[in-house]
Length: 271
Image (cartoon, rainbow, N blue to C red; front, side):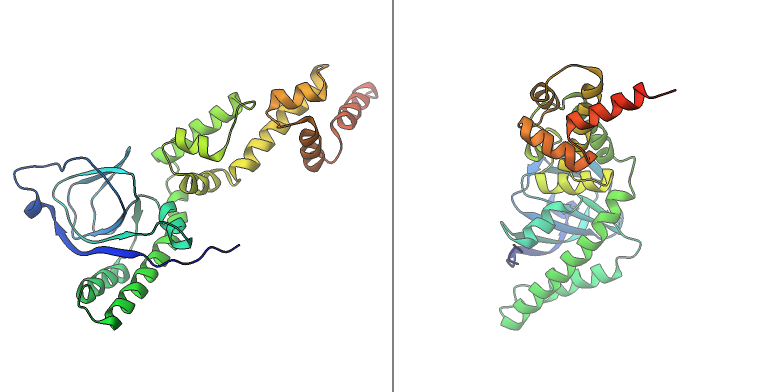
């Protein structure tokens, strides 16, 4: 069922200059975000830090912080900003899956949106409120369209290394409870973003990848041990012997024991 588009609650829109707001300091204090914070730097400056990821502050990089993240900034830092609350619905899902940093070759269109938002914010005019929501929807659309390219274009990023570690953990612990929530939590990502990152990196959903690896392990056990199907199912992390047989036949094209017999006959008929 398609999720409802729930419009964001706008908390603040404007221009922020850290050098005015924070005096006699070169680095801002750590703080935990409570809402979505989308920012477009004005000029180049210091360094932005969100959780364990950092990025130079540049005029062509949009910063997308999500609720619950820890962030701070090495100054100088001046930006256009939007702070908003969206707790559920389709827009919340999109915003949650955005990378923390999205680089653009040209931010003229995005800059125009921020400038227009600043001009029309908090005027008390109903039509301006409608315009603001339409501009924010347009901005979210642009960011979403570019976010997949960001993930694919940074194969050596910390995110990629996190996925590599996740794959190693999966392959060593196929009998464990390898749920999306558990693995996302271990990687310090929310589940929606982790799912998108995993699929962009591997070409498969987490469920597809885990099941493929479990089937591969079961094939090896079928032809090299005398374990029962129940034992193999347990060893490979399937919830039951019946589901193991179902998943195996769907993937391989024959039932587990039938497959093992075919492999045995091939070996015995070699001349």
